[in-house]
Image (cartoon, rainbow, N blue to C red; front, side, top):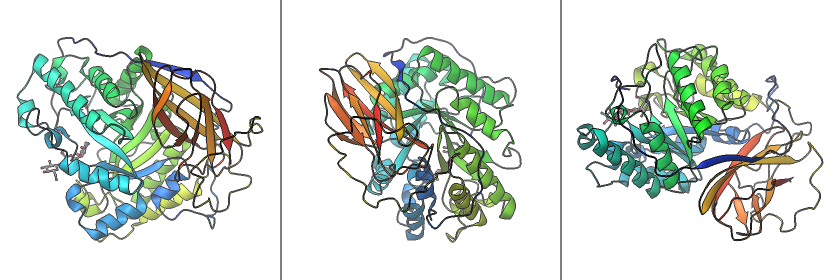
Length: 478
Ligand code: G2I
Protein backbone atom coordinates (compact mmCIF):
# COMPACT_ATOMS: atom_id res chain seq x y z
CA UNK A 1 0.00 0.00 0.00
CA UNK A 2 2.54 2.50 -1.08
CA UNK A 3 1.08 5.92 -1.42
CA UNK A 4 1.62 8.42 -4.16
CA UNK A 5 -0.51 11.39 -5.35
CA UNK A 6 -2.77 12.15 -8.48
CA UNK A 7 -3.47 14.00 -11.68
CA UNK A 8 -4.77 13.21 -15.08
CA UNK A 9 -4.39 14.04 -18.71
CA UNK A 10 -5.03 12.45 -22.03
CA UNK A 11 -7.73 10.34 -23.52
CA UNK A 12 -7.87 7.05 -25.18
CA UNK A 13 -10.73 5.58 -27.10
CA UNK A 14 -12.11 2.33 -25.85
CA UNK A 15 -11.53 -0.71 -28.00
CA UNK A 16 -14.66 -2.60 -27.33
CA UNK A 17 -17.91 -1.48 -25.93
CA UNK A 18 -19.99 -4.04 -24.16
CA UNK A 19 -23.62 -3.86 -23.44
CA UNK A 20 -24.87 -4.90 -20.06
CA UNK A 21 -28.48 -5.84 -20.18
CA UNK A 22 -30.60 -7.27 -17.46
CA UNK A 23 -32.64 -9.68 -19.48
CA UNK A 24 -35.16 -11.07 -17.13
CA UNK A 25 -36.02 -11.32 -13.54
CA UNK A 26 -37.82 -14.41 -12.39
CA UNK A 27 -39.81 -14.82 -9.26
CA UNK A 28 -38.88 -13.98 -5.76
CA UNK A 29 -36.83 -11.15 -4.40
CA UNK A 30 -34.32 -12.37 -1.87
CA UNK A 31 -35.50 -11.71 1.60
CA UNK A 32 -32.91 -10.08 3.77
CA UNK A 33 -34.09 -10.33 7.30
CA UNK A 34 -33.00 -10.92 10.79
CA UNK A 35 -30.12 -13.23 11.40
CA UNK A 36 -31.35 -16.06 13.53
CA UNK A 37 -29.20 -17.59 16.18
CA UNK A 38 -29.86 -21.27 16.48
CA UNK A 39 -28.04 -24.18 17.97
CA UNK A 40 -25.64 -25.87 15.59
CA UNK A 41 -27.13 -28.92 13.98
CA UNK A 42 -25.59 -32.29 13.45
CA UNK A 43 -25.22 -31.22 9.84
CA UNK A 44 -23.13 -28.13 10.57
CA UNK A 45 -20.20 -27.94 8.20
CA UNK A 46 -16.81 -28.46 9.78
CA UNK A 47 -14.70 -26.32 7.47
CA UNK A 48 -14.91 -22.71 6.37
CA UNK A 49 -15.23 -23.53 2.69
CA UNK A 50 -17.96 -26.12 3.14
CA UNK A 51 -19.93 -23.87 5.42
CA UNK A 52 -19.63 -20.91 3.06
CA UNK A 53 -20.65 -23.13 0.15
CA UNK A 54 -23.85 -24.00 1.99
CA UNK A 55 -24.63 -20.29 1.70
CA UNK A 56 -23.72 -20.21 -2.00
CA UNK A 57 -20.53 -18.39 -1.11
CA UNK A 58 -16.82 -19.09 -1.00
CA UNK A 59 -14.32 -18.74 1.83
CA UNK A 60 -10.81 -18.24 0.51
CA UNK A 61 -7.25 -17.46 1.48
CA UNK A 62 -4.31 -15.72 -0.12
CA UNK A 63 -1.44 -18.14 -0.50
CA UNK A 64 2.19 -18.06 -1.58
CA UNK A 65 3.58 -20.45 -4.20
CA UNK A 66 6.80 -21.01 -2.28
CA UNK A 67 4.86 -22.37 0.68
CA UNK A 68 3.18 -25.14 -1.30
CA UNK A 69 5.88 -27.51 -0.06
CA UNK A 70 4.94 -26.84 3.58
CA UNK A 71 2.68 -29.74 4.50
CA UNK A 72 1.07 -28.02 7.49
CA UNK A 73 0.24 -25.02 5.34
CA UNK A 74 -1.06 -27.05 2.43
CA UNK A 75 -3.05 -29.25 4.79
CA UNK A 76 -4.93 -26.24 6.13
CA UNK A 77 -5.40 -24.72 2.69
CA UNK A 78 -6.83 -27.90 1.20
CA UNK A 79 -9.04 -28.63 4.16
CA UNK A 80 -10.50 -25.22 4.88
CA UNK A 81 -10.77 -23.09 1.77
CA UNK A 82 -12.64 -23.25 -1.52
CA UNK A 83 -11.10 -20.20 -3.11
CA UNK A 84 -7.49 -19.09 -3.48
CA UNK A 85 -5.84 -15.76 -4.27
CA UNK A 86 -2.16 -15.68 -5.21
CA UNK A 87 -0.74 -13.24 -2.67
CA UNK A 88 2.00 -11.88 -4.95
CA UNK A 89 2.42 -14.18 -7.94
CA UNK A 90 0.01 -12.44 -10.33
CA UNK A 91 1.26 -8.94 -9.68
CA UNK A 92 2.71 -7.09 -12.64
CA UNK A 93 6.33 -7.46 -11.55
CA UNK A 94 5.81 -11.22 -11.27
CA UNK A 95 3.98 -11.85 -14.53
CA UNK A 96 5.79 -9.41 -16.86
CA UNK A 97 9.28 -8.99 -15.41
CA UNK A 98 10.60 -7.48 -18.61
CA UNK A 99 8.40 -5.83 -21.17
CA UNK A 100 6.76 -8.37 -23.42
CA UNK A 101 8.23 -11.36 -21.57
CA UNK A 102 5.61 -13.03 -19.46
CA UNK A 103 6.38 -15.44 -16.65
CA UNK A 104 3.50 -17.43 -15.25
CA UNK A 105 5.49 -20.13 -13.47
CA UNK A 106 4.74 -19.18 -9.88
CA UNK A 107 1.15 -18.14 -10.57
CA UNK A 108 0.56 -21.38 -12.45
CA UNK A 109 1.65 -23.42 -9.46
CA UNK A 110 -1.08 -21.78 -7.41
CA UNK A 111 -3.73 -21.90 -10.13
CA UNK A 112 -3.01 -25.55 -10.85
CA UNK A 113 -3.12 -26.41 -7.18
CA UNK A 114 -6.42 -24.62 -6.71
CA UNK A 115 -8.01 -26.19 -9.76
CA UNK A 116 -6.86 -29.65 -8.76
CA UNK A 117 -8.61 -29.07 -5.45
CA UNK A 118 -11.78 -27.74 -7.09
CA UNK A 119 -11.21 -24.28 -5.67
CA UNK A 120 -12.03 -20.98 -7.30
CA UNK A 121 -9.20 -18.59 -8.11
CA UNK A 122 -9.30 -14.84 -7.51
CA UNK A 123 -6.82 -13.11 -9.79
CA UNK A 124 -4.85 -10.32 -8.12
CA UNK A 125 -4.12 -7.96 -9.81
CA UNK A 126 -3.95 -6.73 -13.43
CA UNK A 127 -3.37 -3.00 -13.02
CA UNK A 128 -1.87 -1.34 -9.96
CA UNK A 129 0.39 1.60 -9.19
CA UNK A 130 2.50 -0.63 -6.94
CA UNK A 131 4.64 -3.70 -7.55
CA UNK A 132 5.32 -2.59 -11.08
CA UNK A 133 8.46 -3.93 -12.72
CA UNK A 134 11.20 -1.35 -13.22
CA UNK A 135 10.50 -1.06 -16.93
CA UNK A 136 6.90 -0.03 -16.27
CA UNK A 137 7.74 2.29 -13.38
CA UNK A 138 9.85 4.28 -15.81
CA UNK A 139 7.10 4.70 -18.38
CA UNK A 140 4.49 7.40 -18.84
CA UNK A 141 1.83 8.71 -21.18
CA UNK A 142 0.59 6.84 -24.20
CA UNK A 143 3.32 4.14 -24.22
CA UNK A 144 2.47 3.32 -20.58
CA UNK A 145 -1.26 3.19 -21.34
CA UNK A 146 -0.56 0.82 -24.20
CA UNK A 147 1.75 -1.30 -22.06
CA UNK A 148 -0.83 -1.49 -19.28
CA UNK A 149 -3.58 -2.54 -21.68
CA UNK A 150 -1.31 -5.10 -23.26
CA UNK A 151 -0.49 -6.49 -19.83
CA UNK A 152 -4.17 -6.75 -18.91
CA UNK A 153 -4.97 -8.40 -22.23
CA UNK A 154 -2.09 -10.87 -22.15
CA UNK A 155 -2.52 -12.02 -18.57
CA UNK A 156 -6.32 -12.21 -18.65
CA UNK A 157 -6.15 -14.10 -21.95
CA UNK A 158 -3.57 -16.55 -20.60
CA UNK A 159 -5.82 -17.35 -17.62
CA UNK A 160 -9.08 -17.13 -19.56
CA UNK A 161 -11.65 -19.53 -18.16
CA UNK A 162 -9.64 -20.24 -15.01
CA UNK A 163 -10.34 -17.15 -12.93
CA UNK A 164 -13.56 -16.63 -11.02
CA UNK A 165 -12.92 -12.95 -10.29
CA UNK A 166 -10.14 -10.61 -11.33
CA UNK A 167 -9.01 -7.61 -9.35
CA UNK A 168 -8.69 -5.66 -12.58
CA UNK A 169 -7.63 -2.43 -10.89
CA UNK A 170 -6.26 -2.20 -7.37
CA UNK A 171 -6.05 0.77 -5.02
CA UNK A 172 -6.63 3.61 -7.47
CA UNK A 173 -8.07 6.08 -4.94
CA UNK A 174 -6.19 8.26 -2.49
CA UNK A 175 -6.61 8.04 1.27
CA UNK A 176 -7.97 10.89 3.30
CA UNK A 177 -10.50 13.55 2.54
CA UNK A 178 -11.74 14.56 -0.83
CA UNK A 179 -12.07 11.19 -2.53
CA UNK A 180 -9.50 11.98 -5.22
CA UNK A 181 -7.79 9.47 -7.41
CA UNK A 182 -4.38 8.35 -6.20
CA UNK A 183 -1.53 9.90 -8.10
CA UNK A 184 0.43 7.33 -10.09
CA UNK A 185 2.02 6.91 -13.46
CA UNK A 186 -1.14 5.08 -14.54
CA UNK A 187 -3.43 7.86 -13.33
CA UNK A 188 -1.32 10.35 -15.24
CA UNK A 189 -2.14 8.55 -18.49
CA UNK A 190 -5.69 9.88 -18.14
CA UNK A 191 -8.65 9.51 -15.83
CA UNK A 192 -10.16 6.86 -18.08
CA UNK A 193 -7.34 4.37 -17.41
CA UNK A 194 -9.52 2.36 -15.04
CA UNK A 195 -12.38 1.85 -17.45
CA UNK A 196 -9.93 1.11 -20.25
CA UNK A 197 -8.44 -1.65 -18.10
CA UNK A 198 -11.90 -3.10 -17.39
CA UNK A 199 -12.83 -3.12 -21.06
CA UNK A 200 -9.57 -4.84 -21.98
CA UNK A 201 -10.12 -7.44 -19.26
CA UNK A 202 -13.68 -8.17 -20.40
CA UNK A 203 -12.56 -8.64 -23.98
CA UNK A 204 -9.77 -10.98 -22.88
CA UNK A 205 -11.79 -13.13 -20.47
CA UNK A 206 -15.52 -12.58 -20.82
CA UNK A 207 -16.28 -15.25 -18.23
CA UNK A 208 -14.42 -13.75 -15.29
CA UNK A 209 -16.06 -11.38 -12.85
CA UNK A 210 -14.25 -8.07 -13.00
CA UNK A 211 -13.67 -6.31 -9.67
CA UNK A 212 -12.38 -2.98 -8.49
CA UNK A 213 -10.41 -3.64 -5.27
CA UNK A 214 -9.33 -1.19 -2.56
CA UNK A 215 -8.67 -0.68 1.16
CA UNK A 216 -10.10 1.92 3.55
CA UNK A 217 -13.39 1.57 1.72
CA UNK A 218 -15.14 -0.23 4.58
CA UNK A 219 -16.54 2.76 6.44
CA UNK A 220 -19.52 4.13 4.55
CA UNK A 221 -18.83 7.66 5.81
CA UNK A 222 -15.30 7.88 4.49
CA UNK A 223 -14.65 10.00 1.43
CA UNK A 224 -12.70 7.21 -0.21
CA UNK A 225 -15.64 4.83 0.11
CA UNK A 226 -17.97 7.41 -1.36
CA UNK A 227 -15.59 8.08 -4.24
CA UNK A 228 -15.33 4.41 -5.15
CA UNK A 229 -19.10 4.12 -4.86
CA UNK A 230 -19.59 7.00 -7.30
CA UNK A 231 -17.13 5.47 -9.76
CA UNK A 232 -18.93 2.11 -9.71
CA UNK A 233 -22.27 3.86 -10.06
CA UNK A 234 -20.92 5.78 -13.04
CA UNK A 235 -19.53 2.60 -14.62
CA UNK A 236 -22.85 0.83 -14.24
CA UNK A 237 -24.69 3.80 -15.72
CA UNK A 238 -22.39 4.02 -18.73
CA UNK A 239 -22.04 0.27 -19.32
CA UNK A 240 -18.39 0.00 -18.37
CA UNK A 241 -18.02 -3.72 -17.61
CA UNK A 242 -17.69 -4.12 -13.83
CA UNK A 243 -19.13 -7.02 -11.86
CA UNK A 244 -17.81 -6.70 -8.36
CA UNK A 245 -16.23 -4.50 -5.75
CA UNK A 246 -13.53 -5.87 -3.49
CA UNK A 247 -13.24 -4.51 0.02
CA UNK A 248 -9.80 -5.49 1.26
CA UNK A 249 -10.82 -5.05 4.90
CA UNK A 250 -7.45 -4.93 6.64
CA UNK A 251 -8.63 -4.03 10.13
CA UNK A 252 -6.48 -2.74 12.97
CA UNK A 253 -6.57 0.05 15.54
CA UNK A 254 -5.89 2.73 12.95
CA UNK A 255 -8.48 1.35 10.57
CA UNK A 256 -10.98 -0.50 12.72
CA UNK A 257 -13.98 -2.55 11.66
CA UNK A 258 -16.70 0.09 11.28
CA UNK A 259 -20.17 -0.34 12.73
CA UNK A 260 -21.63 0.65 9.35
CA UNK A 261 -19.74 -2.07 7.45
CA UNK A 262 -22.96 -3.87 6.55
CA UNK A 263 -24.37 -0.62 5.19
CA UNK A 264 -21.33 -0.29 2.95
CA UNK A 265 -21.74 -3.83 1.66
CA UNK A 266 -25.46 -3.27 1.07
CA UNK A 267 -24.96 0.03 -0.72
CA UNK A 268 -22.35 -1.32 -3.12
CA UNK A 269 -24.49 -4.39 -3.79
CA UNK A 270 -27.46 -2.16 -4.54
CA UNK A 271 -25.51 -0.79 -7.50
CA UNK A 272 -25.87 -4.19 -9.13
CA UNK A 273 -22.41 -5.60 -8.42
CA UNK A 274 -21.20 -8.43 -6.26
CA UNK A 275 -19.31 -7.48 -3.16
CA UNK A 276 -16.32 -9.54 -2.10
CA UNK A 277 -14.27 -9.21 1.06
CA UNK A 278 -10.91 -9.78 -0.55
CA UNK A 279 -8.04 -9.42 1.94
CA UNK A 280 -9.55 -9.79 5.38
CA UNK A 281 -7.29 -9.70 8.38
CA UNK A 282 -8.07 -8.33 11.83
CA UNK A 283 -5.25 -7.46 14.17
CA UNK A 284 -5.72 -8.48 17.80
CA UNK A 285 -6.32 -11.64 19.76
CA UNK A 286 -8.77 -13.61 21.82
CA UNK A 287 -12.42 -12.78 22.17
CA UNK A 288 -12.12 -9.26 20.78
CA UNK A 289 -10.59 -10.44 17.55
CA UNK A 290 -12.99 -13.38 17.37
CA UNK A 291 -15.94 -11.08 17.78
CA UNK A 292 -14.86 -8.87 14.92
CA UNK A 293 -14.45 -11.87 12.63
CA UNK A 294 -17.97 -12.91 13.67
CA UNK A 295 -19.31 -9.47 12.83
CA UNK A 296 -17.71 -9.50 9.39
CA UNK A 297 -19.17 -12.92 8.57
CA UNK A 298 -22.61 -11.90 9.82
CA UNK A 299 -22.49 -8.75 7.71
CA UNK A 300 -21.51 -10.62 4.58
CA UNK A 301 -24.18 -13.26 5.06
CA UNK A 302 -26.79 -10.55 5.53
CA UNK A 303 -26.11 -9.17 2.05
CA UNK A 304 -27.07 -11.59 -0.72
CA UNK A 305 -24.53 -10.20 -3.16
CA UNK A 306 -21.66 -10.46 -0.70
CA UNK A 307 -20.60 -13.71 -2.29
CA UNK A 308 -17.23 -14.47 -0.76
CA UNK A 309 -14.67 -13.76 1.92
CA UNK A 310 -10.91 -14.18 1.50
CA UNK A 311 -8.48 -13.97 4.40
CA UNK A 312 -5.06 -12.52 3.57
CA UNK A 313 -2.94 -15.47 4.58
CA UNK A 314 -3.26 -18.74 6.46
CA UNK A 315 -1.31 -18.71 9.75
CA UNK A 316 -0.40 -15.56 11.67
CA UNK A 317 3.20 -16.15 10.68
CA UNK A 318 2.21 -16.02 7.00
CA UNK A 319 0.70 -12.56 7.33
CA UNK A 320 2.19 -9.37 5.92
CA UNK A 321 1.36 -8.06 9.41
CA UNK A 322 2.52 -11.10 11.35
CA UNK A 323 3.16 -9.14 14.54
CA UNK A 324 -0.52 -8.19 14.66
CA UNK A 325 -1.54 -11.89 14.70
CA UNK A 326 -4.46 -11.05 12.39
CA UNK A 327 -5.40 -14.45 10.93
CA UNK A 328 -7.42 -17.54 11.82
CA UNK A 329 -4.57 -20.00 12.54
CA UNK A 330 -1.66 -19.55 14.91
CA UNK A 331 1.97 -19.94 13.91
CA UNK A 332 1.73 -23.70 14.42
CA UNK A 333 -1.37 -24.02 12.28
CA UNK A 334 -3.75 -24.45 15.20
CA UNK A 335 -7.24 -23.00 14.97
CA UNK A 336 -7.61 -19.79 16.96
CA UNK A 337 -10.65 -18.47 18.77
CA UNK A 338 -11.14 -16.30 15.70
CA UNK A 339 -11.44 -19.44 13.61
CA UNK A 340 -14.10 -20.93 15.87
CA UNK A 341 -16.07 -17.68 15.80
CA UNK A 342 -15.86 -17.51 12.02
CA UNK A 343 -16.99 -21.09 11.50
CA UNK A 344 -19.77 -20.89 14.03
CA UNK A 345 -21.02 -17.62 12.51
CA UNK A 346 -21.15 -19.38 9.14
CA UNK A 347 -22.93 -22.37 10.66
CA UNK A 348 -25.28 -20.45 12.94
CA UNK A 349 -26.51 -18.17 10.22
CA UNK A 350 -29.08 -19.87 8.12
CA UNK A 351 -30.21 -17.59 5.33
CA UNK A 352 -32.86 -15.26 6.59
CA UNK A 353 -35.67 -17.80 6.26
CA UNK A 354 -34.48 -20.99 7.87
CA UNK A 355 -35.50 -24.10 5.98
CA UNK A 356 -38.77 -25.49 7.27
CA UNK A 357 -37.44 -28.94 6.42
CA UNK A 358 -33.71 -28.69 6.82
CA UNK A 359 -32.13 -31.06 4.36
CA UNK A 360 -30.39 -34.05 5.80
CA UNK A 361 -26.92 -34.60 4.46
CA UNK A 362 -26.57 -33.30 0.93
CA UNK A 363 -25.95 -36.00 -1.63
CA UNK A 364 -22.30 -36.82 -1.77
CA UNK A 365 -22.53 -37.33 -5.52
CA UNK A 366 -24.97 -34.86 -6.97
CA UNK A 367 -26.22 -35.89 -10.38
CA UNK A 368 -23.67 -34.99 -13.00
CA UNK A 369 -26.19 -35.39 -15.80
CA UNK A 370 -29.26 -33.36 -15.15
CA UNK A 371 -32.52 -34.88 -16.36
CA UNK A 372 -32.93 -34.56 -20.08
CA UNK A 373 -36.69 -34.01 -19.88
CA UNK A 374 -37.43 -31.14 -17.56
CA UNK A 375 -40.88 -31.14 -16.01
CA UNK A 376 -43.14 -29.01 -18.13
CA UNK A 377 -44.68 -27.36 -15.09
CA UNK A 378 -42.46 -25.11 -13.05
CA UNK A 379 -42.16 -26.08 -9.40
CA UNK A 380 -44.73 -24.60 -7.05
CA UNK A 381 -43.98 -21.01 -6.29
CA UNK A 382 -41.54 -20.66 -3.45
CA UNK A 383 -40.90 -24.35 -2.95
CA UNK A 384 -38.33 -24.80 -5.71
CA UNK A 385 -35.94 -22.29 -7.15
CA UNK A 386 -35.93 -19.32 -9.44
CA UNK A 387 -33.34 -18.03 -11.84
CA UNK A 388 -32.50 -14.59 -13.17
CA UNK A 389 -29.85 -13.74 -15.64
CA UNK A 390 -27.91 -10.84 -17.04
CA UNK A 391 -25.95 -10.69 -20.23
CA UNK A 392 -22.88 -8.93 -21.51
CA UNK A 393 -23.14 -9.07 -25.28
CA UNK A 394 -21.07 -7.90 -28.17
CA UNK A 395 -21.26 -8.49 -31.89
CA UNK A 396 -21.01 -12.23 -32.35
CA UNK A 397 -20.92 -13.32 -28.75
CA UNK A 398 -22.10 -12.98 -25.19
CA UNK A 399 -21.53 -14.00 -21.60
CA UNK A 400 -24.52 -14.81 -19.43
CA UNK A 401 -24.43 -14.78 -15.64
CA UNK A 402 -27.26 -16.74 -14.08
CA UNK A 403 -28.32 -16.44 -10.47
CA UNK A 404 -30.15 -19.38 -8.96
CA UNK A 405 -32.13 -18.77 -5.78
CA UNK A 406 -33.83 -21.37 -3.63
CA UNK A 407 -37.46 -20.77 -2.70
CA UNK A 408 -38.87 -21.10 0.77
CA UNK A 409 -37.36 -24.54 1.31
CA UNK A 410 -33.78 -25.73 1.12
CA UNK A 411 -32.85 -27.62 -2.04
CA UNK A 412 -30.18 -30.22 -2.71
CA UNK A 413 -29.71 -29.53 -6.40
CA UNK A 414 -30.96 -27.45 -9.29
CA UNK A 415 -31.18 -27.39 -13.01
CA UNK A 416 -31.79 -24.36 -15.20
CA UNK A 417 -33.29 -24.64 -18.69
CA UNK A 418 -32.81 -21.90 -21.28
CA UNK A 419 -33.46 -21.54 -24.98
CA UNK A 420 -30.78 -20.23 -27.28
CA UNK A 421 -31.76 -18.43 -30.49
CA UNK A 422 -31.07 -20.25 -33.75
CA UNK A 423 -27.42 -19.97 -34.71
CA UNK A 424 -26.22 -19.39 -31.15
CA UNK A 425 -24.13 -21.91 -29.26
CA UNK A 426 -22.69 -22.35 -25.77
CA UNK A 427 -18.90 -22.51 -25.95
CA UNK A 428 -18.06 -22.91 -22.27
CA UNK A 429 -19.61 -22.66 -18.86
CA UNK A 430 -18.47 -22.38 -15.25
CA UNK A 431 -19.88 -23.41 -11.90
CA UNK A 432 -22.45 -25.58 -13.72
CA UNK A 433 -22.62 -28.71 -15.80
CA UNK A 434 -23.98 -27.87 -19.26
CA UNK A 435 -25.93 -30.29 -21.38
CA UNK A 436 -26.60 -29.27 -24.94
CA UNK A 437 -24.88 -26.45 -26.77
CA UNK A 438 -27.69 -25.07 -28.93
CA UNK A 439 -31.45 -24.74 -28.87
CA UNK A 440 -32.79 -25.97 -25.52
CA UNK A 441 -29.82 -26.11 -23.17
CA UNK A 442 -29.72 -27.03 -19.54
CA UNK A 443 -27.30 -26.30 -16.71
CA UNK A 444 -27.13 -28.48 -13.62
CA UNK A 445 -25.37 -27.71 -10.37
CA UNK A 446 -21.86 -28.97 -9.67
CA UNK A 447 -20.78 -30.63 -6.43
CA UNK A 448 -20.22 -27.53 -4.37
CA UNK A 449 -23.19 -25.35 -5.30
CA UNK A 450 -26.19 -27.67 -5.45
CA UNK A 451 -27.26 -27.39 -1.88
CA UNK A 452 -28.92 -24.07 -1.10
CA UNK A 453 -30.69 -23.14 2.05
CA UNK A 454 -34.07 -21.44 1.73
CA UNK A 455 -33.65 -18.06 0.06
CA UNK A 456 -29.94 -18.60 -0.60
CA UNK A 457 -28.45 -18.03 -4.01
CA UNK A 458 -25.55 -19.11 -6.16
CA UNK A 459 -24.30 -18.08 -9.57
CA UNK A 460 -23.06 -19.79 -12.66
CA UNK A 461 -22.24 -18.52 -16.09
CA UNK A 462 -21.72 -19.45 -19.67
CA UNK A 463 -20.22 -17.97 -22.76
CA UNK A 464 -21.62 -18.31 -26.24
CA UNK A 465 -21.34 -17.34 -29.85
CA UNK A 466 -24.19 -15.65 -31.68
CA UNK A 467 -27.01 -13.85 -29.95
CA UNK A 468 -27.76 -14.11 -26.24
CA UNK A 469 -30.92 -15.82 -25.04
CA UNK A 470 -33.75 -13.50 -24.15
CA UNK A 471 -36.43 -15.73 -22.63
CA UNK A 472 -36.77 -16.32 -18.89
CA UNK A 473 -34.72 -19.23 -17.54
CA UNK A 474 -36.69 -22.00 -15.85
CA UNK A 475 -35.23 -23.39 -12.64
CA UNK A 476 -36.09 -26.87 -11.37
CA UNK A 477 -35.06 -27.90 -7.87
CA UNK A 478 -34.20 -31.35 -6.67
O1 G2I B 1 -0.07 -4.83 1.66
C1 G2I B 1 -1.07 -5.77 1.93
C2 G2I B 1 -1.93 -5.96 0.72
C3 G2I B 1 -2.70 -4.69 0.40
N1 G2I B 1 -3.57 -4.87 -0.73
C4 G2I B 1 -2.94 -5.38 -1.94
C5 G2I B 1 -2.14 -6.65 -1.66
O2 G2I B 1 -1.47 -7.08 -2.81
C6 G2I B 1 -1.15 -6.42 -0.53
O3 G2I B 1 -0.45 -7.65 -0.32
C7 G2I B 1 0.90 -7.50 0.08
C8 G2I B 1 1.48 -8.89 0.30
O4 G2I B 1 0.80 -9.48 1.39
C9 G2I B 1 2.96 -8.77 0.63
O5 G2I B 1 3.54 -10.07 0.66
O6 G2I B 1 1.58 -6.85 -0.96
C10 G2I B 1 2.94 -6.61 -0.62
C11 G2I B 1 3.56 -5.80 -1.74
O7 G2I B 1 3.33 -6.42 -2.99
C12 G2I B 1 3.67 -7.95 -0.42
O8 G2I B 1 4.97 -7.69 0.03
C13 G2I B 1 5.98 -8.15 -0.76
C14 G2I B 1 7.25 -7.46 -0.31
O9 G2I B 1 7.09 -6.06 -0.54
C15 G2I B 1 8.40 -7.96 -1.11
O10 G2I B 1 9.58 -7.39 -0.64
C16 G2I B 1 8.47 -9.47 -1.03
O11 G2I B 1 9.48 -9.94 -1.88
O12 G2I B 1 6.12 -9.54 -0.61
C17 G2I B 1 7.11 -10.06 -1.44
C18 G2I B 1 7.10 -11.57 -1.35
O13 G2I B 1 7.19 -12.01 -0.04
